[in-house]
Image (tube, rainbow, N blue to C red; front, side, top):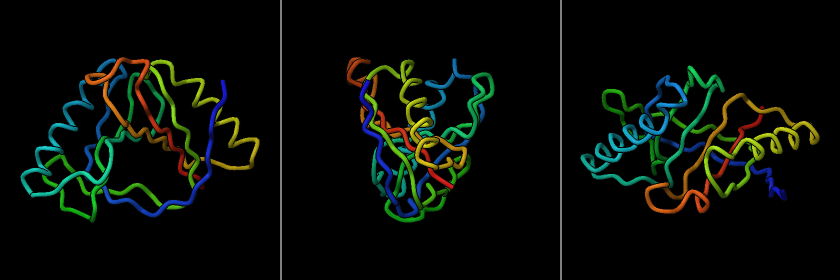
Length: 152
Protein backbone atom coordinates (compact mmCIF):
# COMPACT_ATOMS: atom_id res chain seq x y z
CA UNK A 1 0.00 0.00 0.00
CA UNK A 2 1.14 3.54 -0.74
CA UNK A 3 1.27 5.70 2.39
CA UNK A 4 1.44 9.51 2.19
CA UNK A 5 3.48 10.21 5.32
CA UNK A 6 4.11 13.88 6.09
CA UNK A 7 6.50 15.68 8.42
CA UNK A 8 5.13 19.01 9.66
CA UNK A 9 5.68 21.60 12.37
CA UNK A 10 2.54 22.41 14.36
CA UNK A 11 1.58 24.99 16.99
CA UNK A 12 0.31 23.98 20.44
CA UNK A 13 -3.42 23.21 20.19
CA UNK A 14 -5.69 23.82 23.21
CA UNK A 15 -8.24 21.04 23.77
CA UNK A 16 -10.95 19.95 26.17
CA UNK A 17 -10.61 16.26 26.90
CA UNK A 18 -11.33 13.35 29.19
CA UNK A 19 -8.52 10.92 30.00
CA UNK A 20 -9.29 7.40 31.18
CA UNK A 21 -8.11 3.81 31.16
CA UNK A 22 -10.16 1.16 29.38
CA UNK A 23 -9.94 -2.07 27.44
CA UNK A 24 -10.00 -2.02 23.66
CA UNK A 25 -13.37 -3.83 23.80
CA UNK A 26 -14.91 -0.88 25.70
CA UNK A 27 -13.08 1.83 23.74
CA UNK A 28 -15.86 2.84 21.33
CA UNK A 29 -18.33 3.13 24.21
CA UNK A 30 -15.88 5.28 26.24
CA UNK A 31 -15.10 7.46 23.23
CA UNK A 32 -18.79 8.01 22.43
CA UNK A 33 -19.57 8.88 26.06
CA UNK A 34 -16.62 11.30 26.35
CA UNK A 35 -17.43 13.12 23.10
CA UNK A 36 -21.07 13.52 24.16
CA UNK A 37 -20.15 14.94 27.58
CA UNK A 38 -17.61 17.37 26.09
CA UNK A 39 -19.96 18.55 23.32
CA UNK A 40 -22.70 19.15 25.88
CA UNK A 41 -20.30 21.18 28.03
CA UNK A 42 -19.12 23.23 25.03
CA UNK A 43 -22.76 24.00 24.23
CA UNK A 44 -23.37 25.08 27.86
CA UNK A 45 -20.49 27.57 27.75
CA UNK A 46 -21.34 28.84 24.25
CA UNK A 47 -18.28 27.40 22.53
CA UNK A 48 -17.79 25.13 19.52
CA UNK A 49 -15.10 22.56 18.75
CA UNK A 50 -12.37 24.07 16.56
CA UNK A 51 -11.78 20.82 14.70
CA UNK A 52 -12.60 17.14 14.53
CA UNK A 53 -12.67 14.79 17.51
CA UNK A 54 -9.44 13.08 18.54
CA UNK A 55 -8.15 10.32 20.75
CA UNK A 56 -4.60 10.23 22.12
CA UNK A 57 -3.15 6.87 23.06
CA UNK A 58 -0.38 6.91 25.66
CA UNK A 59 0.22 3.16 25.56
CA UNK A 60 -0.77 0.22 23.39
CA UNK A 61 -1.86 -2.21 26.12
CA UNK A 62 -5.19 -3.39 24.70
CA UNK A 63 -6.38 -4.56 28.16
CA UNK A 64 -5.43 -1.28 29.90
CA UNK A 65 -5.41 1.53 27.31
CA UNK A 66 -4.44 4.97 28.61
CA UNK A 67 -6.51 7.19 26.32
CA UNK A 68 -7.42 10.87 26.14
CA UNK A 69 -10.50 11.80 24.10
CA UNK A 70 -11.59 15.29 23.14
CA UNK A 71 -11.87 18.20 20.78
CA UNK A 72 -9.56 21.05 19.75
CA UNK A 73 -10.86 24.45 20.89
CA UNK A 74 -10.10 28.01 19.75
CA UNK A 75 -8.51 29.09 23.04
CA UNK A 76 -7.69 27.57 26.43
CA UNK A 77 -11.01 26.89 28.19
CA UNK A 78 -11.71 25.83 31.76
CA UNK A 79 -12.70 22.23 32.26
CA UNK A 80 -15.46 20.95 34.50
CA UNK A 81 -15.47 17.69 36.47
CA UNK A 82 -13.84 14.96 34.40
CA UNK A 83 -13.43 17.35 31.45
CA UNK A 84 -9.95 18.84 31.58
CA UNK A 85 -8.30 21.73 29.78
CA UNK A 86 -5.30 20.24 28.01
CA UNK A 87 -3.29 20.66 24.83
CA UNK A 88 -1.86 18.78 21.92
CA UNK A 89 1.85 19.58 22.02
CA UNK A 90 3.39 21.74 19.35
CA UNK A 91 6.51 20.91 17.38
CA UNK A 92 7.42 18.42 14.72
CA UNK A 93 5.04 15.60 13.96
CA UNK A 94 4.60 12.80 11.47
CA UNK A 95 1.12 12.18 10.09
CA UNK A 96 -0.71 10.00 7.62
CA UNK A 97 -4.35 9.97 6.51
CA UNK A 98 -5.90 6.49 6.70
CA UNK A 99 -9.12 5.42 4.99
CA UNK A 100 -10.91 2.28 6.13
CA UNK A 101 -12.02 0.30 9.19
CA UNK A 102 -10.40 1.17 12.52
CA UNK A 103 -9.52 -2.49 13.10
CA UNK A 104 -7.32 -2.49 9.96
CA UNK A 105 -5.12 0.51 10.86
CA UNK A 106 -2.12 -1.47 12.11
CA UNK A 107 -0.27 -1.59 8.74
CA UNK A 108 -0.45 2.23 8.56
CA UNK A 109 0.99 2.51 12.09
CA UNK A 110 3.75 0.07 11.12
CA UNK A 111 4.57 2.01 7.94
CA UNK A 112 4.76 5.26 9.91
CA UNK A 113 7.04 3.73 12.55
CA UNK A 114 9.31 2.36 9.82
CA UNK A 115 9.35 5.77 8.10
CA UNK A 116 10.38 7.47 11.37
CA UNK A 117 13.14 4.90 11.91
CA UNK A 118 14.38 5.25 8.31
CA UNK A 119 14.41 9.07 8.57
CA UNK A 120 16.01 9.37 12.02
CA UNK A 121 12.94 10.53 13.96
CA UNK A 122 11.77 9.39 17.39
CA UNK A 123 8.15 9.60 18.53
CA UNK A 124 7.33 10.99 21.99
CA UNK A 125 5.38 7.85 22.83
CA UNK A 126 1.87 9.22 22.26
CA UNK A 127 -0.17 8.52 19.13
CA UNK A 128 -3.11 10.71 18.11
CA UNK A 129 -6.03 9.77 15.88
CA UNK A 130 -8.24 12.51 14.44
CA UNK A 131 -11.64 11.27 13.29
CA UNK A 132 -13.00 13.10 10.23
CA UNK A 133 -16.23 11.10 10.13
CA UNK A 134 -18.02 8.46 12.15
CA UNK A 135 -19.11 4.82 11.74
CA UNK A 136 -22.61 6.14 12.51
CA UNK A 137 -22.50 8.29 9.34
CA UNK A 138 -20.47 6.33 6.75
CA UNK A 139 -19.60 2.70 5.94
CA UNK A 140 -16.41 1.42 7.65
CA UNK A 141 -14.61 1.43 4.28
CA UNK A 142 -15.13 5.24 4.11
CA UNK A 143 -13.85 6.14 7.59
CA UNK A 144 -11.15 8.84 7.48
CA UNK A 145 -8.63 8.95 10.32
CA UNK A 146 -5.49 11.09 10.51
CA UNK A 147 -2.81 9.32 12.55
CA UNK A 148 -0.25 11.65 14.16
CA UNK A 149 2.95 10.97 16.09
CA UNK A 150 4.49 13.99 17.88
CA UNK A 151 8.29 13.82 17.64
CA UNK A 152 11.01 14.30 20.26
